[in-house]
Length: 327
Image 1 (tube, rainbow, N blue to C red):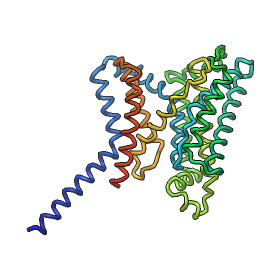
Image 2 (image 1 turned 90 degrees about the vertical axis):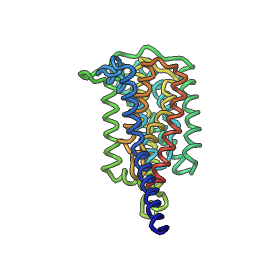
Image 3 (image 1 turned 135 degrees about the horizontal axis):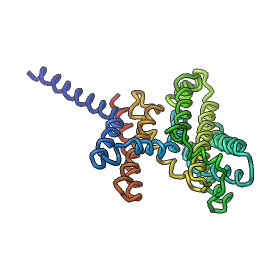
């Protein structure tokens, strides 16, 4: 009788384990639906409106740009802690060029170039000098923040032309321009990750860098290219944010770094391989956006919102590790 009881017990334990694994895998999606249901029940007249959902998309559009390129860096197994301060720095540079009379198209192009150069610095430090991504981008984060304060003298840069401000405040039909830009960038990143050779190389390096190297992948160049993409995306986000605010502020985008990492980690739980994906990051962004919007509607203190953001990151990492252990 003992011999028949043990398999049953083991089977029950295996069933529970599988159930926990499935719940962990879909926990992020369940969390998003749960938040929507919660705020819809608490404030249906305000939350459940097309205008509010458009507001949510507009509110997370800048974060979405940064999270999309943060996804690329995390695919190769690294972090980019400098994305927020780089976005702020590029915003200040672009604003000063515009105030100085430069053509808006040229100013935007110069800002994007500055972002790519900054990304190249990060990539060189990590891929070729062998510094850990955490240390390298923590150092450049501090440097970029200091450069933004130095260039702006710690003050906000005003007086931007309307043609530029349209990038952040304009609409094409009912859709805000920042939302369109964020969606286009996300689609480009999705295409790179899923349909190109470089995308497969990014995943290979992130999965096992040594195995990828032995397979002929130029791991240093691959990691370097991921930081180039990150620099470009952070610069684009900084430019659009500057247009949205109609001013260049030296710390306007600093807080986006933490939220972008939270969004990517939340999305990892949806991947069977435990890898970052654009689809997963989009769900993570949905949680961050809906939570922020709902708490604002409920008039929750902004400091409490910061506490909840920190808890989200802890939850994201926990779910990610749990889902990988159950596979």
